[in-house]
Amino acid sequence: MHRLRNEQGSALMMAVIILFITLGLGTALMMTADGQKASASNQQNGENAYSMAEAALNAQIYSLSVKWPTATNAPSPGSSPDLGYPTSCNAASNGASYCPSTSDLAAYPSNTQTCPANTPGDAWNPGPVRSSWTTYVRDAGTAGSAQQQFFNDATEESALPYNSSYTQPGSNYLWVRAVGTVNCKTVAVVAEVSMQTLALNFPQMVLNADSFAVTNHGNKTILDTQGVSSTISQISVRCGGVAYTPPPPSSCATYYKSTQISPSDPTQASTWANPPAPSPTLNATQLAAVKTLAQQNGTYFSGCPGSSANLAGSPVYIEGGAGCTVNLGSENSLSSPGFLVLVNGAISMGANSTYYGVIYALNQGNLSTPVVSLGGTSTVVGGIDADGAASLNLGSSGNGLDCGDHKCGDLEFDAAAFNSIVGFGGADETPNSFRVLPANQ
Image (tube, rainbow, N blue to C red; front, side, top):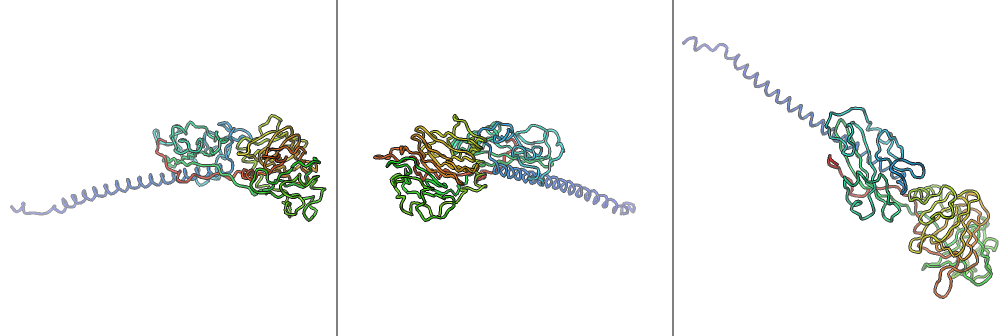
């Protein structure tokens, strides 16, 4: 009984029991902390991957705002002006063919880390998963179509990597998909992007030049300052920069009857812009926007176009050259006027051709002879603008369009034609089109 009442050694048993309990709790806490750390690391990698994908998307949109894909380019990069977009862009592209450059995404470097097999990655790229960014530009179809309104993974993955239907009105839409992978965590985002145009400040005058000449001696209307418009246009004549009180002298405004300029009265000062519009009409930045837009819709000519060239559209940009004469036929329509820019050379119209729109001759060849000549029974419905010291030859037929009881003239004003004078204004993300894609898209 004495030995049974002996309590020596019980403290050791209690200590062992408490130790095991403490070890169990410590192990559980360590496992919980380790799980929390892994979860936090995974979440952080996901946030970093999202940030990389969003940054790549914004960089690609910026590249599109610098140069929109042309209507005629191929799926792989071509040569200017048909600088097509590749199937995809990544760090290795480094700005090629208007992909984002590595400097645009310097905060998100790629590396050679290869993730374990079966790691979910870019659904459009079955290759090894590595820390990197990738962007995809895809045609979004015409405005109002299902392809333009809703992103469909299966449709867009195989769609052309450029805006193939640009020449159709209202079809300036692209889907941009961007993927970011950080520490084997991948996030894909998508947004719709549309091309923007910029209205240019262009004087709305039926004629703006240094001088003009009419060769008809009769009573025919040659220069119609109202034409098909409800308003009447002024006439701008610079006369070599020599100051004059309107009307201008006959040396820079040659006509033989006051009725040849109608319905304005050429003897009245109000018929003439005072002071006349300055030269050049568009500055270098504005011209670059027009040229870019023409390149993108396939209406850019690096030299002097042949007689069979299609010169319809807005804008048409012709570089021309010394001795270049553009033979302009019937182009555009009253409801769809054009804008034709000739950098260097002259324009000649003959027979019974009619051009609807505005003709702008930059006259960079510094010609003092006519840069636009209307022969035969040709007509311009819109306006003519010429820079420098060059003149305009308005012809003598007085034919033009039929305005009821009389002919309208060889050059007729159309105020609506000046609405088509626009340039490339960049690219913009369509509101509410951005979203994070599921892993399989």
